[in-house]
Length: 296
Image 1: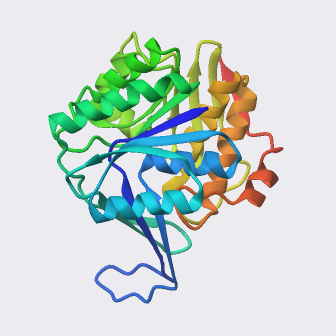
Image 2 (image 1 turned 90 degrees about the vertical axis):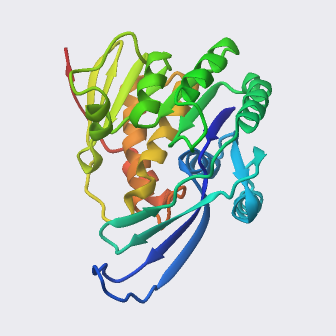
């Protein structure tokens, strides 16, 4: 089973408009409401693929209750720790070509709430083969929070995928997750002079529509999408993590894994909201040869 962790979840609202015009009034043609936050999005993609998954994290207030209810409706198994603060909301405005996001800050997490989550995580992690640790840390969670979860997972025999940014990435990196998935800007911001060692066992760096580069023990691989898709890219990175977590669990060889990663990420762009994939697009792109040269 794959466990996904979302410490700063959200109620995701996606508005579809004909065109996004700054300072203008927009008529919304479609509204999508989903349980959100990067780890929940990863769980949504895995669930759509029929993979056994459990999602956990911190939820509070009326918004948190709504997120939990939506997870139940979608049939995604969840084991969240309750908090006193109100779970945030995020709004993405998609215009058919791209999307513009508005992310609320997360609630303050108390030391007791963080301790309760560590206790819950310690009891859950033994059930997982792979743990995906995704997204920002809400206020109050120690900056080394992901590093602590990486070490707890390793002690339980579970492998880890880390997808975060800023200081959370720096500290999590030092804990040695099995795989890290920053985008190019996130990596350069934290390590402008080059990445330090030791670090993750493998690193997959996203370059948006240009594809990704995977630095692994067996070589450096570049993968590019077979075609450029327009739509809503807000969930593409989370679909990438879902594919990586599944491949890590199954021991999929890197070239085949990267083909799956690129196809699934593209299928997320073709879907209306983050955490959702367009399965016909995924099936159509999966046979395409997208893995480039191996850099020695």
